[in-house]
Length: 291
Image 1: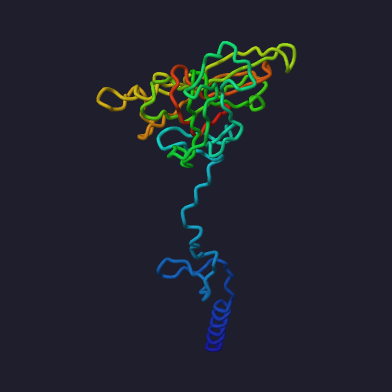
Image 2: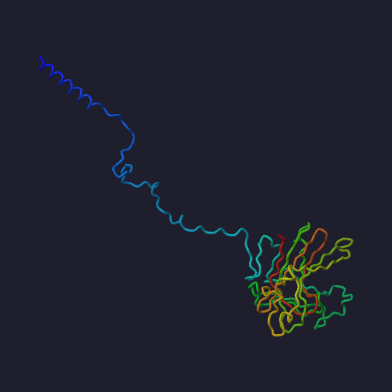
């Protein structure tokens, strides 16, 4: 009997042990950590382009700098630049355009100027387009000669160009006096005219000079030419700002002024001399609206 009980007890213990070993283990979503400490990842034979993008040469190149807003016009190196949006009037004198001689015409009353004559015995001056090396590079310029008094030169009517309200303006032009001419003060001027009694009435003229930009720096609207550019040794005078001259004798004039054009019936711009009657050339005249 005792042996039977021992056998049954042993069978119960084996059964209990088998039941305990056969129980299901709880599921887990935690990855199995291999012995090297790295997390297991799926082994996909195809590379994901998002995970390993290839370089696009177009994206790795340095970006191209954008073009400047507004065209820049360079007169000559090391002088000055200006934005083309400021330009009100510009000519390189590749053609005569609306420019005219400023002199006493045949149909005008010579009055007190009747004694003024050029070398040909006439009150006409010579204004023509000529071929010459110029700062603008077009190799054309206006040549003014056979002058008989300082105010004779070239003129243009630019009444409609100016703003009716008060505004600042700047002008520049390249000029040159040939060698051998008498010293003359080459300058840029303008004339403001009102007609008393209507367009056919009496002209009331006011003659003005463009003001100097910076006299201390030699940025002037008028200069004495030609010999005063040089010292007795033939060297350039430093006080004349060498950036504003070329080796072949061209000189850059720059001036500024303020005008209320609605106050006047007519506005004319001149290139002339303040003294002397030297022949002179003019190239690339530009008028800018103030900044």
